[in-house]
Amino acid sequence: MPKHNIFTMSFARVYPMYVQKAQRKDRTQAEVDEIICWLTGYDQKSLQQQLERETDFETFFTEAPAMHPNTGLIKGVVCGVRVEDVEDPLMQKIRYLDKLIDELAKGKAMSKILRQ
Image 1 (cartoon, rainbow, N blue to C red):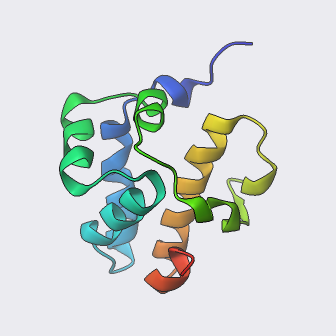
Image 2: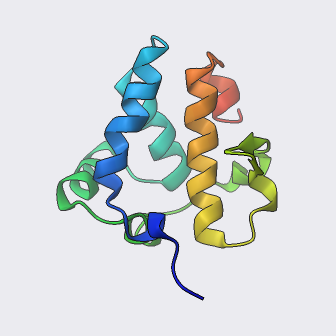
Image 3: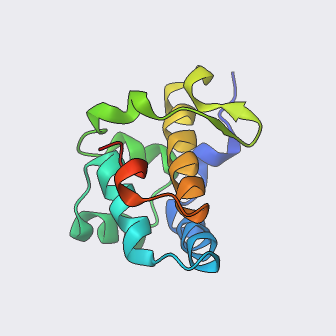
């Protein structure tokens, strides 16, 4: 089965779109970074290194220190697909991130986004 195009796309290329989406709704880049770090286990320095290296999504998630144990609590629809029903593990991680950024842009409180 061929790889999905998003897997080979540079995370650094999509990252500014996440930030723009958040900022259009009066949220901040710092909040986007907090979500990404919460989900993947990266700290701010290692996140910046991934962006500078322009790693693809597959590498970005493969090298992630540790997916947060509460990712199973992320539920809902993004791009017409229920994130909890995505079968491909990598695509599910990408959809989790998309869902969290959507929640940020919709004005949800950070404590709820981070499933605290």
